[in-house]
Amino acid sequence: MKPVYPLRRTCKEVSALLIAREDRALPLVERMALRLHMAVCEACPKFERQLLTMRQAMGRWRHYSED
Ligand SMILES: [Zn+2]
Image (cartoon, rainbow, N blue to C red):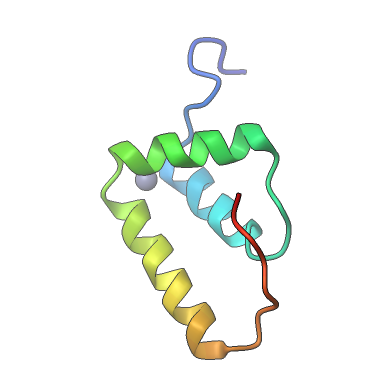
């Protein structure tokens, strides 16, 4: 358990969340944790951009709305 920072995620957890987000909506708490991590991390936003680029390139992803 992580009692002090319930929204803290490691880069490994965040990349797993980013990938999971492609298939299913994340719970609000995970979306908040994601946003929080993105604000302080350099690597994960780059990874997210790669995922977005991949998704656009593949063109087979169904439409989904963020927020
Ligand atoms: Zn990170």
